[in-house]
Each structure stands twice: as C-alpha cells, then as structure tokens.
Length: 275
Image (cartoon, rainbow, N blue to C red; front, top):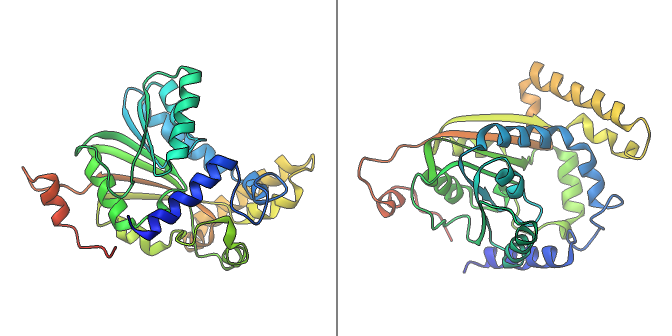
C-alpha cells in the first residue's frame, strides 16, 4: 500500500477511535469546531441536493466516516452503501446502524481510488470533505466509471485559494493529514475530463467573521446577514468564489466509454498516475 494511504488510515483510525480532530486543538466549540459554527448554509444546500436526488435510488457515500449521511439517505428511501478507508470508522458506523436497525444500508471498508463496484452502479454518489484527501485523477475516474449515465455526484469540500485560511492551515498542521490538498480551481478543469457538466456553488467567505459571535444571542442574525453578503458577492463578482472556504460540487454526465469496452480497458485509457 502507498505510504500516503497508510498515513490516511492511521490518522483517521486514531481520529474515529478517540473522537478527536488531530493533535493541536480540541474538536469542540473551543477548538477547531468553532469554525464549523458558520457552515449551516453550505451543509443545508448539500443535504437538500441529496434529499432531492436519493429516493428509490442506489447511493454510494464516498468516505462515509462515522457521522455520515448514510442513515438519513436510507430513511429517505435510498439503498445506500457507505465506504471508508478507515476500518475503525466502518466498524463504528456498522454498529450504530445495527443498533438503530436501519434498513437498506451497508458499510464496506474500501479504497476510494480503486472501487470494487461494477460500472454504472450508482444513481447518486456523495461525500463531505473526502475529495481533497485523494488523488483526484484516480477519484474522478472511479466516480465516472461507477456512476450511471444519468447519475449525479455531490460533494461538500474545502477550497485552497484564500491566503488567510491557508495561513491558519499552515499554523495548525496537526489538525489534518500531511497529504490533504484543499481544492483549487484547476481541479474543476480536471473534473471536466471525466464529466460533461460541473456545477460549483461557493460558500463561506464573510461568514467566517461571525465565528467570534457564535455564543451571542445575535449570532443567527449576524450569520444570516453575512451569508446573504457572501451570495451577493459570489453572484456579482464570480471570480471571488475562489476565495470561499467551502464549495458544493455537482458532477453529472460522466464520460462515455466505448461500446463494449471492459473495465480494465477503460482504465487503460486513463493517463497513468504516479504512485
């Protein structure tokens, strides 16, 4: 196994076993968790996309972890498979699903860059904060291969252009694996090699200024105002979107394979990726 993947497994096994986020700050509201107090809008949009596209569908949650949306997807009427490279995450998620007696849900330990599913398997593929851990060419290939021709993939991910956010990332390396790479605009160009349609929705720029007020009674009003300011800015000045913290990406129209081409044959047609 590649050293990169070994590091990812070790980091996430520790994280899921201990319920922590890295080594430098607590995971709760006084540590790294405080920043997630302002992401309601992006998460609500992501969840709305899942709910709108999952009923009666075959869904893959890509990098499910333990706090996944798989349970909700199953309750909304989907047949769901959740995968993660962390065996600890899969064991915990499976145990929780068994206790809750959720039907139509299965968890499997699997490498997201080398899926063992057949071609054209899923109507919907989704994930939060997973793509930026992966070799994107391998990941986009697997997503396009396993997605049905009329399917969709929806991901909530961090972006990597904002210099202030990047300064914080450099100052807190223990909060993430050394191989993480928040997405760049050029990554969407790479996605275009595998998907005919890419919709990108930007969130969280000025909303980060609401974090110091998260315990204030006025926090909902402050956050709502800044959310509207963000969306106005991204609409009027589209180039400003690259400086957002988070993005929801919707991928559809997967690249067509040659008729009758096998999985191995299609894989051979993808440019080689250094291990």
